[in-house]
Amino acid sequence: MSPEIPRRKFLEAASTAGIAALAGCSFQEGNSDADYDDDTPEPPEYIDETFQYFFQNEPGFNQVGGSIPENAEDWQVVHSALENHEDINEWRQMQLNDHHMARLDIKERWEPHVQGHEGSVEQIIQTTQQKYQELKQEQPETHKAITYSTSLVNAVSEVTEQMDSAAADILNNNLAEYVLQEIDIEIPDYKLSTLRATTNLPRGYCENTQGEVTRCTAPRQPEFEGSQKQYNSGLRHPIGLLQYRQNGEQQVRYFEVENNQDWDVVAKPQNSIYRSPLDQETYEDNGTWFPEHHVTALDYQKARQLEKQEILDPGHPDIYLLGALIETVDDTSQGYDYDEDLKTGEEWQIPDGGLEPIVSDSFGESISEYVTNPTNQGRRYLDGTARAIFSALDKHGFGEPIALDGTIQNPEIFHTTEQKRQEIIEDQAYNQVKQRVLN
Image (cartoon, rainbow, N blue to C red; front, side):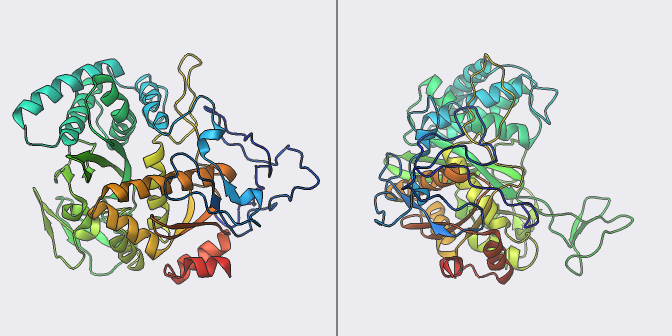
């Protein structure tokens, strides 16, 4: 959302338990119709307010909740988002009911896949189970989570004949937990969520008509004519962030859900093409690739370097890092036209303006540390922090500016203003987020 867009008022009344977004309903913009008690302070009227969020000690918040100052206002205090949605009793339900999104996609109702897909979710379940048993016999030493995820991706491709990354993302990441439950395979703490990456050529890089990729002589050159063309880079390619426990130990993998990639489809983050160092000339994996063409939102330091070099757009590391956290809570984010007989798995909605976060170095580096050195405690910290952030956004709207400081173990979460957010991005003051937000 650009600064020129009119500021919208907060939606939530200070002491009301009800909120506009129920299960299957979008969080609507506009003024709250709730009445305030004469003794209850009203929340700030416009978006141009800065304050810290404080979190109740709620199930699922883990290490985050419980420390609330006596003078905290009601609009600063965040309860679990589960309280705001009908028929949602546990965080796990927000993952399991995402299979409705896949069913809708297969039924031809979701753009841009107006042609729909072949098959059904039930066929995907059956085919996944068959492929899992076959792969398990062929590769008995492979982690069960990887064997299962590979089986699902292959089954989705075979049954639906999906041919692109968008469809692969919607079908695989929205079905993963549900199908696992249906075929009754035991994989502790299994979660496959969407993570955005870039595989495009950054601005200033060229490709000739023969498909040979070369580095241009200068960055940000104007549109090329003739045999050369300019590419815009962005974190738009969806892959899977795979989390699970194996023999009691937490594991994290980058997992490609589109099954026609030329590089490794499953890798530890620190060994993946996405974290290949920028001072490395090329990356060799079934071909020759340039490290600066590949990064995910969770490769924090590399993403910031690419932002500084104007290869990634300003603020993109923040937007897609927050997006990755939200996806670990719930993969289905948008309002879709579900049939009345198809119960929705959608609980919330990102507005057209998108997410508006600012992320500090300490917070981003703590996530980067977790994905490269995962621990059971680190997973608990990540889950608690992600759910707390999700609930803070759910309280006032997913389009509100939000600032993340501290670490995933001890997060400090603020509502900020678009002006302060833009100033931090322009100054690249990511080591001063809390200080700049509060001043």
